[in-house]
Image: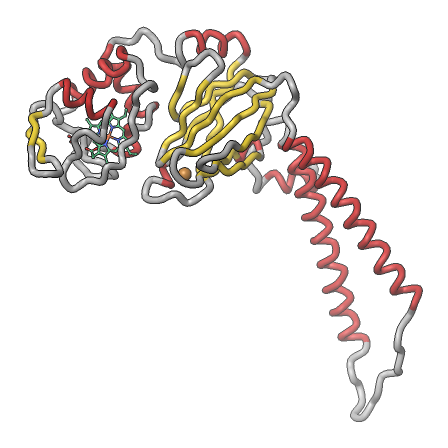
Length: 316
Ligand code: HEC
Ligand SMILES: [Cu+2]
């Protein structure tokens, strides 16, 4: 196989799975190979001249040449034209990245320490999983509940900050039905490195069905659904199930244990306490932990809360 510069570039860039990706990469490659070319030209000329015009004899002087107008015009005009060309390319790429097609499907994105919530036009919400149809433009309208986060999808070549108190937008059109990783690209505290999500790109009918079912929630038995939700809804980002402490207490052997609370009281863990912890986490704070758990009010259906409780009861 003969490698073109573009193939070589692709070794160090992620797969291109959005319509924008080839354009972004083309811009990158043009700048990259121009830089390589000029590096070789400049350093090569420098090395050649250093040898060619080195001082050979003691006391030898070089001839005094002050300038060459023709040469100076050439080396000003050519780079200036190149810069204009790069500007035009950049502007075109920026314009297509900034303005979503009018018919784009619109999804709300909310970031908070340390999870992503996605709200679809029909009211469905998902956490840390964004389902989208393939080959259709999707526009994200995004905001943050606390501090600045950044929605970064390497395969789509998009990255956009989310700011509290304001909306920012980005858009993409996925070209392959596969799972794509989302990262938070703005350092946002302890859980930052765990603040990932998954974009599930589906063929249109599969997407319709997925959305209909409330974002993948299926008719699994409660404890199994709970297990799935535990990672999907990002509980696992803050809670281990093996007794170790992460941002929050381990939920291993939760049911029936006696928990000391901030303020001196203690509570015996039962179903109601778990439900309250999920819907109103600020009501009772486990001693020695920050009040860092976000509320899942409105994000989990009753059936899903029941499923999480059933699952947590099974983890001993
Ligand atoms: C951003 C981190 C974070 C996420 C995400 C999170 N929690 Fe928490 N959780 C905490 C922290 C911190 C505490 C301890 C402070 C408190 O009591 O609010 C806690 C406390 C709890 C408690 C009480 C634990 C005990 O030992 O008494 C339960 C139950 C719980 N979380 C369940 C969940 C479930 C279920 C989910 C997913 C739907 C979840 N949490 C998601 C951080 C988180
Ligand atoms: Cu973040």
